[in-house]
Every structure is written in C-alpha cells, then in structure tokens.
Length: 339
Image (tube, rainbow, N blue to C red):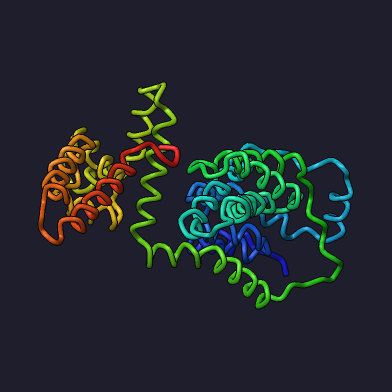
C-alpha cells in the first residue's frame, strides 16, 4: 500500500514521540526507539519535520529498486546525528539497567554491557541501515571489564560500542518479493520489546524509590567530580543540571537565588537511605550534619554509653548501636563509587 505524506505528518503530530508514524511506514526499529526514548528525547522527533518526505519516499520504493541499491558493496554514509544518538541511547539504556538491575551479581559483566549494546544497536538499526550486533556486544563486554564497578561506566562502553557499530554499518537486506508483515505480529513484538525495557525500571521506581534517587544523586556527584580541574566548567554543568528550577521560577513568578540552587543541589547529592536516617537519629544529628559533627556526637555518646564507664544493663547494646551508626555515616562521607 502506498504511504501518504499527509497521513505521516498527522501521525507525527499526534503520536510522534511514541513512533506512530514510523509504525505506519513499517520502520519498526525506529518506532521502538521512539517508544523507549519518547521521540529521541524530543530532539529527534522535532528534527523529523524535515525528514518525513524522505521516509515516505523510502517506504514507497519497490523491492527491486531497494535490491539494486543494496547490491552496492560500499557501506551506507556515516552521519554525526546517528552516531550521537548511538552514544546517548547507549548511555540511557545503561543508566536504566543500573537503576533497575544493579542488584544482580553478574550485572557489570553481563547485564550492563548487553543493555548498552542493545541501545547502541537499536539506533544503528533505525531506517535502512544496520550493523554487526555480535561485534558491538563484544566491544561492550570488553570495555565493561575495564571500567568494572564505575558509576560512569555506561559512557565509555557506549562510546566504544558506537565506534564499533559505525565501523561495521551496512544496509539491511531487502525484503523478499511479495513478502508482507502482518500488523498484529509486528505490534506484538514491539510490545514485548518495550515491556522488557520498561519492566525493570518501573519495578525499581515504584518499589525502591530511595535507591533510585540515591543512584541518580550519586551519578550527579560523580559527573561533577570529573570537572574538578576546571572549576568554571563544573559551574556550567551544575547550572545546566539545575536549569529546571530556573524554568520553574520563570513560569511561577518565583524568585531566583544562586544560594537556593546550591542548596537544592546539595540536598540532591545528600539523599539519605533509610539506614543512614536511622543512624542520624541514633546520634541525634540533623541531615545537614558534617563529618566533624558526626565524629563529635559519636565521641560524646560513646563516652557516655561505654560499658567500662556505664554500669547499666543495656549500656553494651546501646554502645554497639552507636558504634554501628557511626560506621554507617562515616562510610557515606568517605570517597566511594567514583565520588
């Protein structure tokens, strides 16, 4: 069936971020990519206002023309937009995996590289191009072992995978003459793929919100620490991360204060777990307590409840609880996980 430019634009406007127009044109990989990234984080969807006529022209080509075009041995042209998308979506898939599946014992060896590789390959397979999935995943696994355990490991893994995918890009094989794909099975496969992506993230967000926020704040802290040698660049990155608050103030008429930004970022970077909140309560501390405050409170309470100085029956249990709380908070304030 001949595809219409007008219908494609209507679907782009109504459900473009969900990939409806790509589903209509038979571009299932592109549709799935838009479903899991909401239109390429909005940027790709906006760019397509100029690309839709070319997409429709490609969808209306007959099989024989496609077969002649793909018989040429030269690889398809490389584009910076596709490469940037590969890197960004690879990182995105890696972060989603870290949020939802990090508790798995084999996460850094298997789950993380497979997740990043899947994101890179999905972008590589959008449209009439594809790449060598096996080589892309191999590059991910090797890079993941080098950066094992790092909070920012999705970045180098995605970069290496994107370079590998670009080096092995090729045209997709043309469909067999007269071959037609039923809409129902196509939609079923897309649904399964979307469910596989969203289920771990949904579980973590709704059932483990504290851990999710803690990981996100940890990523922000690790990202800012990368720019310790360029304070001005760190300030620019911090400004961009807190841009939503500036926009909120603009639309609500609220005031903007630089100190409020810094306090907001500090709160984000000091998101406490339930265990740490209990430890603060045991040591009679507030959430903004510094390392010096923690040490001073611990010493005072330890002196009071040490069994050698306190004859009460529950002194030893109380002392152990105080000591454990101090260790929990001390561990938080030590550099860890790339912070």
